[in-house]
Image (cartoon, rainbow over all chains, first blue to last red; front, side, top):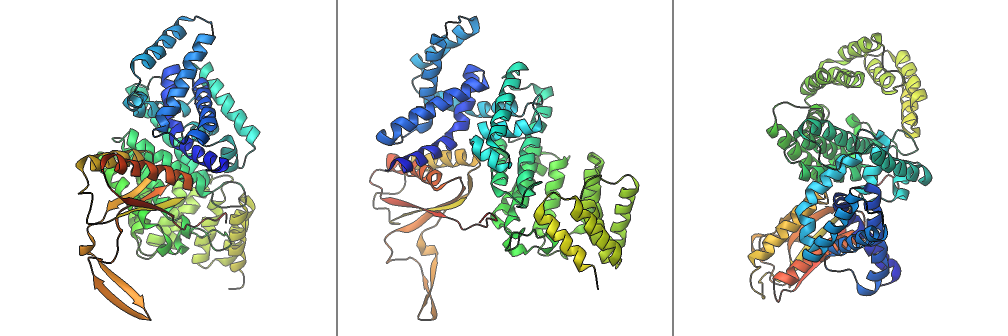
Length: 420
Length: 123
């Protein structure tokens, strides 16, 4: 094996093992920065030894053994005989002496460890951006470079963000225990929010030249699927995964040959990924079986499922979609949801009815800076034949979006309103 | 990126039928990969006797019922993974095949890794 090939294999093992490794180390050393450093030390050791020795049969256990040894060394070196640390050092040595089967030690706690690490990375003391970066780094195993590329940010910015996030966790003395029952719901909501934020940033990039960055969607899906394994009885987790699987199923149909966005109603449904749809519908079924009360993710997944089940726009159950948006709006009133309801109403009961919903929304203050409002209004106006007004709305929307692909599409639609 | 992996072997099992321990270990590995969010789909295939081949030769379509007597190695199972690299697919398959080596003495089998063609707007 050449060195480059060996390094690529080690990188692959690292990505597969790093989250579990760091999660286990966080439990032991109760410090995210130190845990990550120890894990990195283990990676360095692997990079120097594996090209000669080959990848061990159980690489995860190998990495953990090295990291633990380094932890013990470090605690010995630091002569700060702070009580906690010496107790911890003893505990580590004891584990090493009496539990040589690191594999078993790893497996016993691993799911709790991973969940705890997710809760820590998504702690409300951190900004959402910091939570997303830290989660991708520690749970997704992404490098700073990869995260920077995904968020179209500079490496220095992301590195700074991660360092600061870890420092803030220490400063806030964030406890490493799993949150208690009362706090758990709120913390889980924060984890779901971060995963969905990562997904959305990939699904409809807010900045840049590409409309989608599928790598982010894939990472979010992976995190979501992992979370399902960790909290199998939480309907919201299944709901979020269902929503992401179904939305991701449309990826191959969402852009044209030159990268231009294709809207849902115009997509070639034959290109939707059936495997992801099937997985999404199954996840939705599990969510609905767990609880009759449908939360926002489950409701959104149910809406996505209506589209996924329909063979065409005409065969879509728009009446049901309208009522799902109503339920969603009742749960969590939002102008964006109301705008989506307007689209569904337009499809279920005619463009004039949809337009009435949009106009009510605008009368109530609209959605400042949100280009999809004039875009939807333009679409409904065009459908009722008010072409001049429609063109003005599309132009207004084009002036508001930050995404180049979307701007081009909107200007096209504006141009299409002239002359007919 | 998505990968399809298949496992092929002589379907007459010259090394004897797969031991139950192997199924248990495969189940455990699959459960782990599902929890990691990497395993999207997996399944085992019935003997080729329950299948058929539909072949085109010289512009003509012919159908032959199983078993596929002339083939030495036949696909017995498959999986679809969502992974970051071919190396991850190799490591995943290495672990899977190591279970065969450890738990099924004398077995001869091959796991084939193929990347699934996917839409990528960045290309």
